[in-house]
Amino acid sequence: MPRPRNSIPSYLPHQSGRARAVWTDSTATRRFKLLPGPFESPESRAAFARLLLELDVAPHHGGQPADSGGLTVNEILLAYLRHAELHYRGPDGLPTDEVRHVKAACRHVRELYGTALAVEFGPLALKAVRQRFVVLGWCRKTINARVERIRRAFRWAVGEELIPPSVHQALAAVTGLQRGRTPARETEPIGPVDDPTVDATLPHLNRHVRGLVEFQRLTGCRPGEACRVRRTDLDTGGPVWLYRPAQHKGSWRGRPRTIAVGPKAQALLREYFTPSLADYLFSPRRAVDERSAERKTPRYPSHMARNAKKRKAKPRRAPKERYTRLSYGTAVDRACDKAFPPPPPLCQELGESATKWRKRLTADQRAELKAWRKAHRWHPNQLRHSFATRVRKEHGLEAAQVLLGHAKADVTQVYAERDLDLAVSVAAKIG
Image (cartoon, rainbow, N blue to C red; front, side):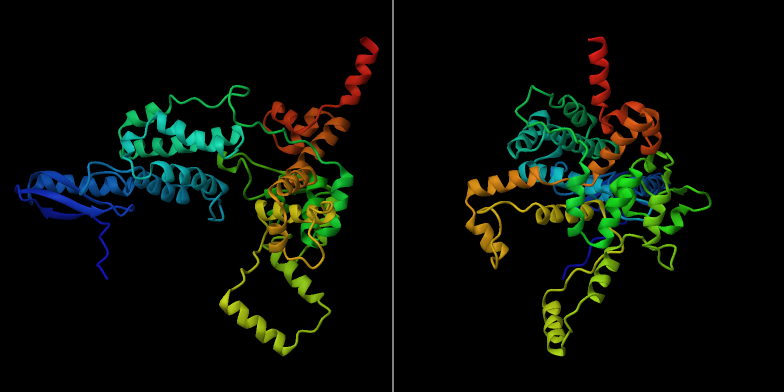
């Protein structure tokens, strides 16, 4: 096994009589830098001390690759991903969704231009990556967001002095796709979901996910905020509780977020209280424990031994302490499939495995099934839109803005549908 390379620069003599620094950066690239002055001179020692400080601030800065004329796109993306995994983290220390989006965007750049030199990645290459996104069927807004993340990676590399500024300046000349002037598809704006649709889905959800849905319907909070409710974040001193989530969409900007919890939502939360104030009220782990406690069929020793053997060969992922925005949405999607099953022959037949079901469907039937699911599914963020629409209709735009936690009223108008009945009545009088 080869000896691991040293990431700390070594002060060594060069054949010219000068001093040099040699090290391996986090991209596994061997780097060197010639220092001014003879070996062991005060001038070279001072330059070496400056280099150590620069590498503390920017680990990817300094020196040249020992075996090539420049960094490749793969090396730039790898360095940026490691930076993103450390930079985009919440107060709990876990990576945010931004890391997942960065990886999704960089994967396609790596597949197309990974081995090319980073200084040669120009506007035409970025447009080619963008065209791949169009061919994959991504919507216009997602494409523009992913392209901006790619530009951000090269802008970061310029700030670390890994590539010249001209690379990012050239990429900045690529403008975003405009509505109606591109083959990329457009998405429908998110609208509210009606109560009968939500009510039909609730029986197919476990108790904790049902609590998430009802809490959102009563408070209008975001899905991620509902997943993070803890007793330690609740101020229960007044008739209306105040929920201050430790992490929310605007926390990185330093903006506070306070969610008013009324009597109905208070009664709902009390059903999920535990002795520990730090426990998440809506927990997948407790949901699994409750389901196991309700099991009526006894667990025989042979059954337990067989399960243990299976788990040893293929361990099951342990349930988490809290739901995430993605796991919450997945649970709602599965419940919608049960509440609104597709008609024959698209549906899964009795006794038919999921694998055989997928193989039985033709390409046209799979497309039809996908359209059916899209038309009969709703996602948790629509509950926020429904809440905003109801509050605006009954109490006005300002009340909706305060309850949703928006800094500007124009953002609230995106969530709250305008009162069409009021427009009709006014038009009937003046039109």
